[in-house]
Amino acid sequence: MTTIGAHPPRYVGAAGQPTVDSWQEGPHNRWTFAHLGEMLPTASVTRHFPAAPAAATERLDALAVPGLSQRLEESYTDAFLVLHRNNVIAEYYRPGFAPDDLHLVMSISKSMCGLVVGALVDSGDIVTSDRVVHYVPELAGSAYDGPTIQHVLDMAIHLNYSEDYMDPASEVQTHDRSSGWRTRRDGDPQDTYEFLTTLTGNGTVGRFQYCSANTDVLAWIIERVTGLRYSEALSKYLWSKLDADRDATITVDSSGFGFANGGVSCTARDLARVGRLMLDGGVGPAGRVVSEGWVRSILAGGDREAMADASFTGIHPQGSYTRQWWCTGNERGNVTGIGIYGQYLWIDPATDTVVVQLSTWPEPDSGHLHELQNQLLLDVSRSLDQPLASQEIPTEETAQESKETAA
Ligand SMILES: NCCCCCC(=O)NCCCCCC(=O)O
Image (cartoon, rainbow, N blue to C red):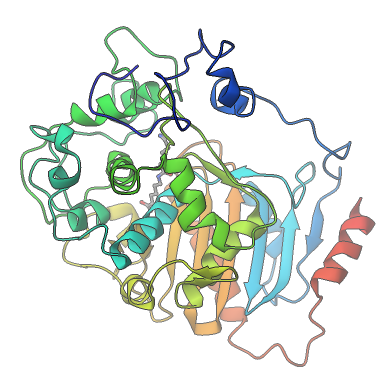
């Protein structure tokens, strides 16, 4: 249990926090029996068995992209979807993966968190020029003592934090262990909140440094200004506005803190709805999420001078990062959420299209696979530059038929 600060209780009226040893007892059980997945690992017992067709579900004919099916396989794709205007014009699911299966989206979770911050900036609850410690005084003395919310949003803070996913000595692995993603070691922080207070830096701001901790700081600020747990805030300010097919999930740590930087799972179709609201000026089917101005700032791109990620600029020389989104700076104005192991939420304003690609690369970060997927996403976008009017675009209904055929 964390000893710092006051965090939103897991349930209203909570007397202390339920733990893995106390969850069965009253009064905690009033809440835990209905939220067991937040206390113990759980497995889904699916409504349909077998849950997914043994063959791939493929509906790609509307796209004039040579070798698309093979390229999806080569990039370890589990789910691929093209939402052109309001029509799903192409979809692919690998054998064993169903359209309504949830998929971990890793750091695309960050882009969702950025939208929640945007909503709270719009409402005046967060001011981007305010210092982080104005909201979370517990971070005084850490690397976050000085930087503003905008610095955190744009990942423009120097941190002694290695984001080397494969290095057991890296801070990102300590972060994982503190957040329940890996086995804790003696001396590790008790939870994510405590981990964030331990981070140091050289005190400089203004240069891009990709750091997953930044997003969890944003989530802490969101909790502080809303009084909600991050998982609840994500629902209230984003997910509930999407008319989503399914609930999303987010992993939580031992204190119930949602892993904002990488813990969201959802379906490909629901993820496309997040992209759709970006193209619709911040409005979802069930209401406005964020102002048009916030979305426009993302689509306009961030500070190219600040960008210092050679892997990204190797592919997108005019690239930048702002408000938790990657901005390619290319002639099409593509922006994207990106997650390790091959997750992309790709926005193509030029053709009013969202492309989702959810993969499971054998390794977290691969220059070769990033290039393959970026080229594929660009080819798909460019293929839509020609009007599709002359083609028979399959609708969602025909998608259903094609699923049944595949099954
Ligand atoms: N440790 C918990 C989850 C961390 C998720 C990190 C993640 O998904 N990062 C995405 C990095 C994208 C890099 C893109 C690029 O450099 O081209």
